[in-house]
Image 1 (cartoon, rainbow, N blue to C red):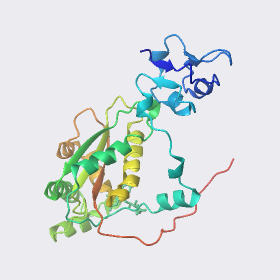
Image 2: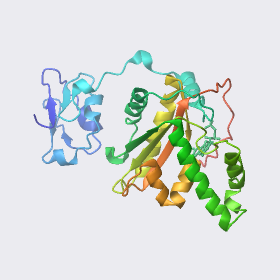
Image 3: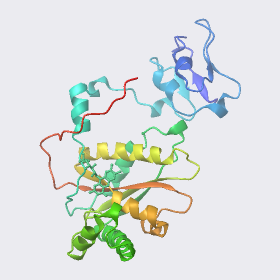
Image 4: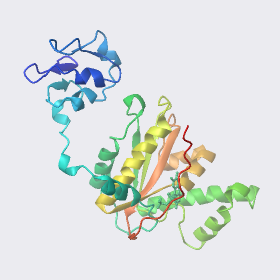
Length: 274
Ligand SMILES: Cc1cc2nc3c(=O)[nH]c(=O)nc-3n(C[C@H](O)[C@H](O)[C@H](O)COP(=O)(O)O)c2cc1C
């Protein structure tokens, strides 16, 4: 099988695939010809699947993005404006979690959804570490608190980290304000070779956090953990981030104890129309 296979019975020779190909590797002469791959097109193909997705006739098959793996869009599931706005605005950072563990297959499903987030040049280099178990997350929080204690030893009132003494005090009183007693930590990471790594994994985590409530799950970005990891790279082993993965961020995940009834207002956007 070549990279592109065009079903000549189905193809309407409309050139839609060629017009939408981001790297221009599909040549379409005119209505009397079928589209075809340009010489060396295989090496430039992003494997993005646009040629398959844009063909209304199901005439395009791609060796690495097979037609049967690309389900048709179900129009009945399309959100209208109000549904889209409410869906996006009702995403919340959850900081109260039930004791219940998060099942492995549910995390797997979330990651399956999140992997459809866009990546620069469709590289798809984001990888995942999943750490399950409240006790294990508590240990990680403890390591972050120990790092804070070290920072406070040098500077007891750090100007840009004024929250630290309070967090350490809370920890000593038995409260985990770092990972919020979450039962699961999902770390997305990307290797050095991924120049858009942080953007790519942030988008993937955003997809994951948007999908989570469908499963009754809440998520929260682990910014305090991130601060500690960036400041003391030795801590990266605590969350199993190997060498060579400079891009990373973690989300706490767990069944939410909180429910929300309103959509909080935000600042008006500052838009610089030019
Ligand atoms: C990059 C990033 C890091 C964050 N880090 C933390 C954190 O460490 N702890 C926490 O409780 N919330 C954290 N948050 C959640 C924000 O505080 C939250 O998004 C913001 O207050 C708005 O609330 P909402 O997410 O419910 O809309 C973080 C959010 C982002 C985007």
